Length: 172
Image (tube, rainbow, N blue to C red; front, top):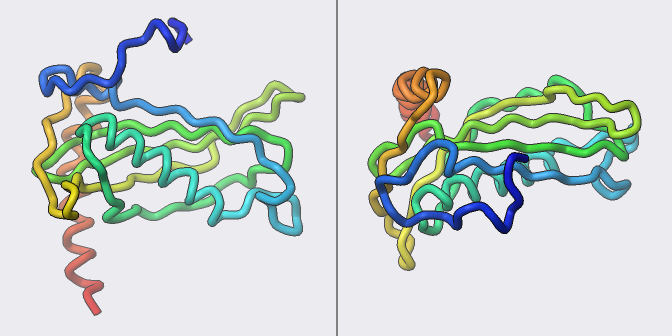
């Protein structure tokens, strides 16, 4: 961390200040026995719950509204997260459309005793902003500053197109 929490700016409501960095969230959670399956690994449903919370906070930081989850891209559990490890979940807005926002999520496992960290999963969540009656409302644009953020911003249009196409195909 470069600054102490109390020295950081509060969440801005100014649309001209809505950068990717301002939407960034990092959550840490210690894996306890009731979070694990019989093999001592973090249960997938528990991890999805934590990922949803992290991405919702990121979306709310960006739009200053209540948000609801619309979709989650495929989630592949590449590495097991063990009892006693720390789950580090990082999320940030990659692109804001009219009423929706795409949030990139990365999940890491830290073994504090061994001093190691490994990437366990990545995913994209989509949220829409809603008013008090549950109606969708417009969200401010996101400002991509770094080359990486700009690249991901551009790629989000294709990811969105694929999501919408898949959604049409899966209507029951």
